[in-house]
Picture 1 (cartoon, helix red, strand yellow):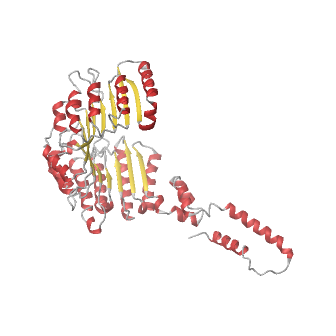
Picture 2 (spheres, rainbow, N blue to C red):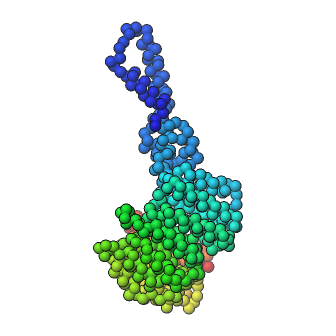
Length: 487
C-alpha cells in the first residue's frame, strides 16, 4: 500500500499539468498558481526518498542493520512494504559468543524475536557458537535454540541451507542434560521442517555416536518423500568433525545404514574415522540415478593422527563407487600420519583423487622421510591430480628433485601449495618449467622454510626471481613466495 499523502501529491501534479482545465479569465490569480506550484515541486523534491522505486530501496536496505531496517519501516507505508520484502531476510547469520555478558544475552533474545517476525522469509541460515566457557552459557544457548527453532516451525519456514558450526559438544561446558535437550530440539526440527533442505553443514558438532545418528535419521526421514513432489533433496552434506575425535564410527553399521537413505547426494564431507566398506557400498547404491549415472560428484575425506584410522578398505570397493559415480572427485586431506604403511593403507590406487593434501605440521623426527609419499604414493594419481598441498618439516632431507619430478609428472596439476625446506633454485626451476609449458600450474604458493633467524638473503633472491619472471607472473599466475624461519 502506498502513502495517501504521496498519492494526493501525484494527483495534484497531474491536475496542475492538465492543459484542458477551464480558465476563469482572471489574470490576477496566475501569480498565485505559480507560487503554489513551486511550493509543491519543492515538497516533491524533498520527498524523493519516499518516491524511490521498490528495487532501489531494496538495494539501500540491504546495507542496513536490522535495527535500522526496523526504524526505516516506520517512515511511511511504502517503506514499510519494502522492509517486509522476503528478499531482505532470506540470508541470515547469527554469531553467538561463549562469554557471559548482558550484550551477548540480548543478542540471543534478538535472534528469537527475529525468528518470530521474519522467520517465514529465511531460506539460508547460519549459526555460530564459539568457545563456551561454562554451563551457564551453553544452557542459555540451548534455550535460545529451542525458542528459535520453535518460532521457525510455527512460521512454516522453508530452509534451503542450514549451517551450525563448531558446537563442540564434547567440551566440559556442555552438561549432559543441556546437550540432550539441544539434540532433541534440532532432531524434531529437522524431522518436521527438513524436507526443503538441499545443503546442511554441521561441521564441528562433536556428537556422540547415538546423538549423531539421531540427527542424521531425522534429516533423512524428512527427505524420504520429496520425490513425490519432484523437488531436489539434500545435495550437500558436511559432516566434518560431526562425531567426537576418538569414536571409531567405521565399526558401527548404523552410520552406513542411515547414509543409505540420502538419495541423490552430490557432495559429502566426512572424517576418515567414518569411512568403511559398508559406507562406500551404501553410497554407491544411494547415489545411483535412474540412468545408472551416479549423483555423487565430490567426496572430501579428512584424516588425522588424532582419530582412529586403522580400518582396512579394499581398492575394489573404491573402484565400484567410482564406476557407479563416473564424475566422482575425491579430495584427501591427511594430517600428521607419517608412517609409510599407514599412508599406503589410506591412499589406494583405485581412489579417483583430484586433490591431495599431506601435512606433517611441526612434527620432526629424523627417521621420518617424505620420500615414500612423493615418489611412490602421490604418483599414483598423476593422471587426474589437479591440486597438491604439502606442509613438510623436512629439515633433515632435501626433496627438491623429487618434488619437481612429481610436478612435471602431473600434467593436470593447476594448484600447488608447498611449505617445506626447499632451496631458492627450486622455485626458479619451477617458474622456468612453467614458462616452457612443461607444466600447467596456475597457482603457486610456496613458503620456504629455513633454519636461519635472519632471512634477508633469501628475501633478496626471491625478489630477483620475481623481477625476472614478472611478465609470466602478472599475466598467467596466482603467485606467492616467501621465506620463513623454522627454528
